Length: 96
Length: 96
Image (cartoon, rainbow over all chains, first blue to last red; front, top):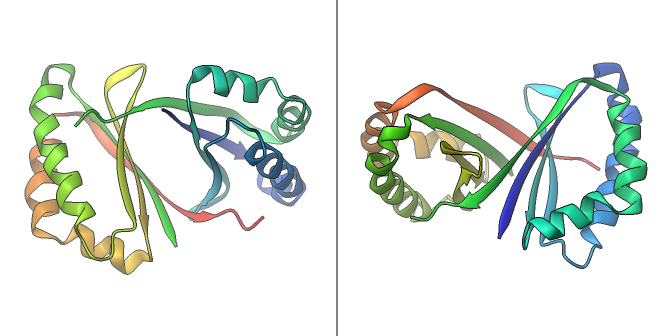
């Protein structure tokens, strides 16, 4: 199981522009057969700081997500409004 | 609903020392009556980078967690092995 945190930093004046793009990205990604979870959150201290928390069975499934039509169409449209580069962390469950 | 990402950065030589402390923290926190989820992950690129993904009903529940005996006992013992300050993000669900 692969957990992902992906963070986007959007210019304040563009938050309302990206909202429907995120809506569509979340809706279409959740419909991918290999998507285990795909949830989007907003930093309480920064309305332009968007945080995805994702769960995929493995790296291949994440790569397949990044190759989908909706990802390749919507992510560049969102990124056009970034104030800084996004970040992502790929994580394993704590072995305990 | 309040979502939290808390990140710790532990010195490489201390990862095995903090492991049982994290084990105990996760076990006791999940037993808190107000804890909705409390999951710990490790950055695939950095074995000293630990990431908690937490869900609480509200800020009061998170504050109560931070006031528990186990939090106040274990977190300073973990933090003694930090290589840099931890970070946390408090988040709301994307309104969609």
